Each structure stands twice: as C-alpha cells, then as structure tokens.
Length: 192
Image (tube, rainbow, N blue to C red; front, side, top):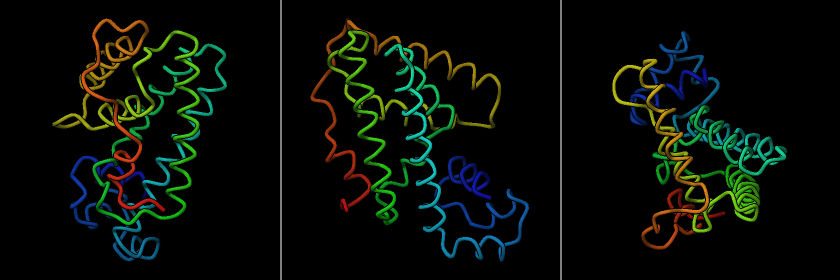
C-alpha cells in the first residue's frame, strides 16, 4: 500500500485522490482508511520511511573505506530510492517529532560523509551537504510521461555528469552562497 501511495503521489501529484492509491494497491478504500485515517497521515508515514532510508544509505556510505566511493554510493542509492521525490510536499503537512528526529540524524550523518570527502580532497571545497541533498531531490523526481527504460538511461547519464561536477577541484565557481539549513528545514515548516 505504501509503495502504491508513493508511486501515485510522485507521479500524479500530492492532490491525487486517495481512491487512486487504493486502486493502485488493489485494496478497498476502507482498508486504506483503517491503516491511515487521513491523507496527511499517509504522507507523514511516506516521508518518515524516505528519511529512514536516507539514514540507511548514508550509514552504508560511511562504511565504505574510499570517501569518493562512499559519496557516490550515497547519491546513487538515494536517487535509486527516489528519496527526494516527496520534497514538494514540504510545508503542506505537519512534521511529526519522529520526522524531525530522523531528518536531523540523516543531516548529521550526511554532513559527516560530505566532510570526509572534502577532507580527502575528492569533493569540491565549495559543495555542501545541502547542495548534495538538493541534487538528490532533483534526480528523484519522475520524468514526464510514462516510465521507460530510456528515461532511466538518461537519468543515469545525467547523474554521472552531475557526480563528475562534484569532484575536486571544481572548474567553475559556484554562484551565490550555499543554501542554509534554516532555509532547507524551513520548507517543512516550524522546527520542533
């Protein structure tokens, strides 16, 4: 049911009817509402799961001995999971305490991963953890039209180009200041 909800919300938008989720999952509306009383509760659960998967991905990345291999594993895993696909829901649902805790754990671990890569000299000095998180968000969004093998091929090609752009030393100066954590979390509403 959760996989169906994720698919419906990320392809049809967050205003998609709950009936579309029930149909995609092959269950009745009653079954859906017994598990999740409201659409917001369902979205909160999906966001929490996405954040938990990010924590798992960054823990696996930190376990990699090679700092670049770890960073690349993290980005590719998160893009593969489409962990940033729910970002557009930011500011439209209430963020639970559990969501904030999990998000902060993911942020702390990702910051360690980015710092490690920067200190090893394999990541541009001017790339921040939030730059990488926002890159993952961009690559997590579905391509327009029906899913196809060609879309996946193009996404992987563009991801390889983007990853190369993260490597040290950067050739082009990045414009403006990096995004702040306050701005990033502020998209979700007041912090807990």
